[in-house]
Structures are given as C-alpha cells and as structure tokens.
Image (tube, rainbow, N blue to C red; front, side, top):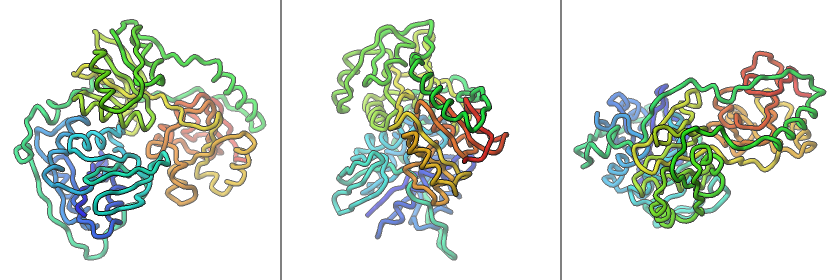
Length: 458
C-alpha cells in the first residue's frame, strides 16, 4: 500500500504531536510504502531526512518562494498537486497543527485531490485492497474507499530511530514541477489575511481566594450565574448585510455584526453550496463542533473561499467581517479578514460537555483519583484530564482536555491539581465559572480561575 504522510514542523523545529501520530499510524501498517510530504523552507529538508530513519522510503519537500505565507486553502491546493503526482492509496494527516490549530487542511486537501475522507480517527479497524474502516472520536465507524485521506487524533507516540537505521531519499519540488500558477499558491493564493496580532489575554479572570469548605457554595454560585448570563456577545456598532449561519449554534455571534441573519439547515456539501450561493450573504458562520468544522472546510474548498477557524469575536469594519481567533497555541490573538465573499468562519460555540460540572484531574492528583471520582459522583460531574496524565498512561486520551485534546465550555469547571499550562487552558477557558484547587499559590491556573483554593485536594 502506498501511503503519503503530511507533516509540518512547528516554530520550535519539531514535528507536531498530531503529525507524529499520523506518521506512527502509517508505520504500523504492514507492508506500507511510506512517503513523507511537507512544505517549507529548504532548511526543512534535513529534518525530513532524519524522519525517514524511522521507516519512510523517501520524503518530498515542497519548497518555493511562491509557496510562502500560504493559508489553509493555498496550502491544501499545493499539497494536492503533489498528492496527485504521487498517486497514493492513502494519505494520513494529523488532525491539526499547533501553529494554525484549524483542522482545515486535511478536508480541503481531500477535496482538491479527489480523495474520500474520514476525520478525527481514533483507530483503523479494517484495511483491504479497496477500502478501510475507522472509528472516529465521535465513536462512529466510518468506511472509505481508496484512494482516501484520514486525519488522526493524538492516538500514537512516534517511535525512536533504531541504531544504524538508514536515511531515505528526499526530492525537492517547486511551483513549476507541480504545474501551479503563482495566483494559486502562497500569499497570492490565500484569501484569509492577518490584519493585526495581539497578545492573548482572553480567559484570564480575577480570582477570589476561598477556603476548601466553600467549594459547594462556589459551585452553586457558578451555576446560578450561568443561568442568568446572556449569551449575546458585544455587538459591533457597524452592521453588515445578510449573514448566514449553518445551524442555530452560531446565531448569537451573527447577531453581533448583522441584523439580517438567515439560518441554513446543516445538510450535505452540494446543498449547502447551492444555498449559500443563492443567499449571496456577506458572511457565513459555522459552529465549532467537529462535524461543522469538517463541512466548513469542504464547502470553502468547493466555493474557493477563505475560512477563518475558531473565532472568539467578530466585528464589522468598512463593510467587511473582521474575525478574531487564537493562534500559536493560544498565546496570540490574530485579527483576520477575507479577500473572498462571502467571508466564512467557524465560531467557538460548542459546549461539548455532558454535564453542568466538569472536573479536570491533573498530575497533582494522580494518586488521588478515587477521591476525584467520588467527588464527580457526588456532583454528577464529568471527569477530564491533562496531557501529562495521558502521556504517563494514567488516564486515557479521550479524556484529555486542551489544545491536543478536546474543548469544553461547561457552566462550572473545577481544575484539581492542574498547573495551568496554556495548552490546557485552551480547552477550558470559555467555561462559565472556573474553580481551581492547587497547593501552589503561584500556579498559573489561578490566573484563569474565578475562585481559587490554595490547598491539597481532600
């Protein structure tokens, strides 16, 4: 089986955790002929060569000045040209990178390369010469015929190279080799443009220190405040012409920038493209659940539109939609505009939780999980965890909250023994009320909490 694995290196020069998982997934397929595919500066070539020591026969580096500053749409078009040239049976991508955090490139690449698609894969259950079956994060079993593309969750840890392992071959391809025009690639081919960047201060709260005996009171106060809280965001003074939402979840975001909001039913890509074209809106907004993010990427590719991911705020400015989203692992907020019409964005809407109260069990309570689950039972709460707990094999990956796990927006989030790393905060910062329990009074988690209990969990 011919497999292409798409990889991207982060600003630290390391392969991202989702792409590392994608590579390991390919390495575990018996008899696979693996090609690594990446896009970047010439210096990326040496890093790709080192990755071939793990088992890939060769690597392809797409490197050309014309490819620079590409958004997800331009990146997908460029990768698709290379994939068509390679004609693999299967393309494996990580769910997302930690640079852009969009989860858009995989679905867009599948469309442009003419591949069937499965996203958010947790396991590959069956492989034959013609098709595969996989289980997704949504606990669905999905079948896809080859050639196919899958995006995988952080389900595997990439192996280390063996002693005396051989380095494979590398081929560098530019714009001419891919038969692309400059207007399709890089900055020229990118409809989404960063207007401005800011340090991300969102999620930080004024923490009130309380005693352990006041925990239940704080929980009840958080639940009451959540019920009384309006969900409408601050409205932009300038208003846009018609804005469409796909489903009802993004409606309140739409109302912040327009008084003319049309709700489109969530249906198949062909019908959504037809309805969007017929409505001729200024903007189209989607929810942040997995199904909406996947469909938004496919529709954007089909209509050749820019798509901004995971927006936390919208504004109308000079008749255009300005979109604000976290970037660079949540440390930065980017203000983005689209050069195509309608502008498209996914907005942070999904609550994702099953319960009103969610308890995050961090590494600091790794030896007290029985008491954590006892508290969860008493509060009828859902239990999630941190990446360190998962990496140490203490709790399973489906429970991981954060940038490389899942995102929840519960009415009340109780962080127990969690330090407050930005990767974890990204998964819980939009909770209604945050209560942190940690023996370290200087733990960063208290900057993101409404109530802080400086104490050991007991």
